Length: 299
Picture (cartoon, rainbow, N blue to C red):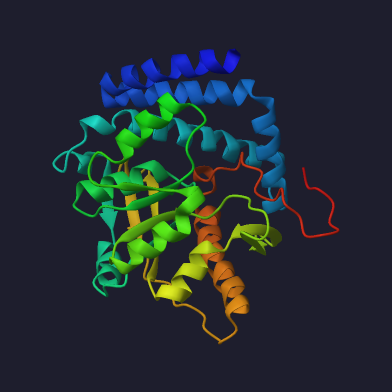
């Protein structure tokens, strides 16, 4: 019953936040996110445990500062999500600007498809949305939300400018079709997985079970793997949608070894961004939940 009430309240909340002026909407969303930080002990516990493992050299005060920053980042993104219906190709640059778009364009011009390597970092919801507003639609791999009404609303927002949703339970077929058509697919590959869908690679020096599908598809189709992250830049008061050059794939002829090696390479890219902007990654997810056989749980 409690969850149903929360869902019932969420839909009008998103609508109301969407009609507020952007700065007011952002301030309200950040306040709400900070309230969640104060009240949700379990999320704080997971976040502090992750930060302790990833940054053993940092003090507890530094880790708390990072974790509070995570909730500020989440609140900021929530505000932008609510504002999606108001954004157009003309005004979206007030919120997010391109950084090194030429790296994406060069990869796309190859005609073999682009695998958009990203993570739950910065404003990940804004990445594909802003890109589609500029005429670059993206296929988004996603798991449906538990609540059908919220799921329907979010899908409507995400796809209003040409993006398409690839169901996570049938993503291989969807990815292969998109690569054959020379399209772009966005993949968030920083969540905990379980074998056989995941393989163990190092993330902050700790074995983490990581989705191997991106590496499998890239090796099979020769699609370009382009890192893309939407980073909050305090200096300009906007997000930067940053594209790095396509990752050079490792090919030794041993397919399974190459899958692991490339998954490690992709994970290293994500780790680099998280190390540089730790307040913008989703530390409250139990990233190291799955352990190699024989290892003790970390949570």
